[in-house]
Image (tube, rainbow, N blue to C red; front, side):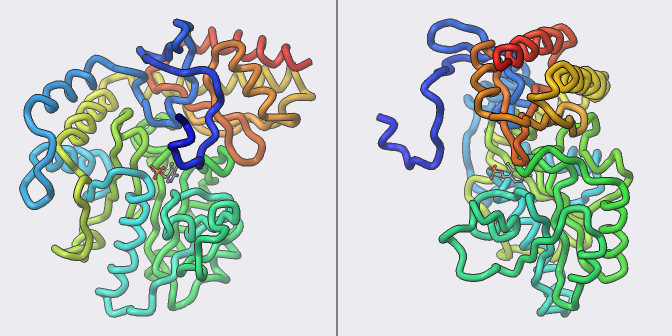
Length: 390
Ligand SMILES: *Cc1c(COP(=O)(O)O)cnc(C)c1O
């Protein structure tokens, strides 16, 4: 029956997950699996969190969809709350990360256009970045594996070497509308931007009138121990893309902007049918309730340290298997020197769910409310998995 799906993903035969609760997934044979991936940073509060289930249940019985032709109070409330905890003054809701990134890109270009700079269309981005799978976002990331056969030209994007401020300065021209960057790179290999890199980008944008876009689709919403990853750096963007963790498992995307930038997007300039619908917004508000609870970010920081210590101990105990550990908070990667797939398989034998990232990395994105004890179990299981390979 799988033949009926477009074969864009090749899922493993096993396990088949049928239920989730807290930080555990359950397969069709009744086995419990510890989830260290959260559906790729999506299930930010684990599976079927009672507060999220209740929010969705209540909205489910009240109203699903009215379209953006009408007011949606849940969307107004979530937008207001997001602006209260961030640099932003305006929010556009979409259904996915790619749509959120596209809205950011469109907003940057439209802003320049409205300021009388019709030729400022080019967006600078970085190699080994990831902004999504739509035509514009694959053009932005410029990963040949993703663009092959899809693009007639560069789409108005240039990719530079990550971290290379000289390359950015050289690439600046009167045609550059903005710069797009992940604060902590995810798919391309878990790597946090250096403070100098982000500060340099902000400075270049301020000097030239280009706009700065942070893609926090993966690293935002508490993932690094801050509401938004860039808040640790004290450097603010002009536009920011959110998605993944904001929905806690329900599809949501959001484009956040400063007031001046967002206000160029007037009625008719952009739109969506499903984005910001009552179901998604009810869940998004419930996710914010949990994100803003006392102690949550402190838990992410403490558990992040704990996870990092585990990865360092793996590298120390199995120097032939593992290299460097990198990342922030509960967004961590570990370089696999040998076959990454073999380590994944060994983890599966230990009923551990982990992910992969570029740069031959194993990727760890556990739920933000994972406990010390659960991470201690993960520590033991990861060491057992590695031992299987030697
Ligand atoms: C996942 C991701 C996207 C794309 O999100 P989709 O919901 O898959 O469209 C964009 N940017 C980053 C940084 C991501 O990690």
